Length: 554
Image (cartoon, one colour):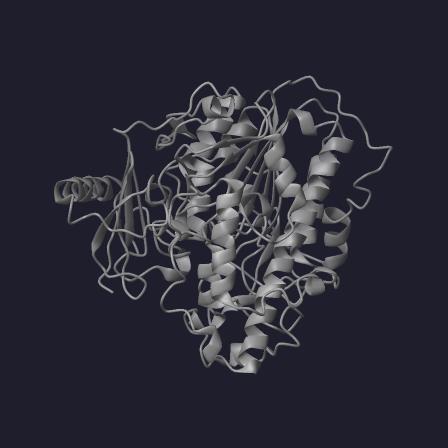
């Protein structure tokens, strides 16, 4: 059994956040004896498809944009509709229902509880990327949001990470107060350092900065011993609540006073201008349930504008901290031998905090000051909501928790040694492809048995030949990829995508799209192609049976 401790803030500061001289001229140089590349996996939370400059945004993201210039930018990469299911696929290479995250633990229904694949944490039917890399000669480090298990035997330390500083839940305040997201369930966030609970955070704690400090400290700790590293940097940014320090808090003041629809239109134009969305394709309208900006009072407009300003500042702050890591890798002569994977776990978030189960009218929410003046500061607890959530998807339809492209198509940028730089790949790719790609670069095989137990095989494909430009696609017109979460269902084969979006965001019926010609999903072609739709529905049913999907009634 894992031993469990509580850690004081003084010890925490010395162990985790000691990487102050990122750009030191005296940084030690690593003596390389293992030439395999290092790996840095960066996962951002709830980032909209057009929230980055290189995907058409007005938000300043120079470090991510430079990463795209140094690597390959993907325009058709897909994930699950929500946090932990995607993370389970990234770290196991298999479907979330097989890995234990058929649904998020917070949203598990009575009908789903107890079924295989609905454990609410990474189960023992899978072996993780960290476990294979650790056993294969890599140092393994993790910093940030875990969301794959709350108990000691489910911590990052128990799933292959040599060093880890993690927030275990789906989201939390970015400040030292440790406020969680959910009334009655997770009102106080839980942080752990390896196997030890962190009782008190430093007074000047800001999550994005401190997660960055922690991952650099871990990388520095074994530098020079000849082993490559795998570093998993899982930002909570840009998940709500919207919190950011100065100067980012004020950087976008006044930029969003024109409202949701104007931003949506600007993002559609931006996505076309940078080439991630076809110029001759139609972008989707602002979601119909979004409020009419002109109907809002001046006070409501002030609150909504401020929320988006703070959110944009969070994106730029995340970019700044990513730049710190990149500069750190350059200073220790590791950047050119490091694969960097940057992506979001799902699309933009359409929810206000009151939409979360148990929050509306609760004493938990009543303690916060969500005035326009205080949003972004400590003791605020606000999310930017449906209008901005739809706008940040740009030309795509819908958002997080549902399978419109705005919920499951996300930015992906990969840099790796020896690849042709500055390219865009329009090939379809999926979350389960990340682990096979990294194992191929690390010259490691996925085992059929682990710790005396048979484990599920990976379902994804390596992207290496896409990265080296040897192939233009890895999925054929015969290959089928499917997914489900919270009753929202999708399946993709070649140019066709069939999707089922439950109410209230959809019609609770299957639709069919030519996703290559119509990535904005503006035209349902199911009536003209009933046989194609039925074939895809049948294939989705086969998938659901294969992975053990449990559909619930409401």
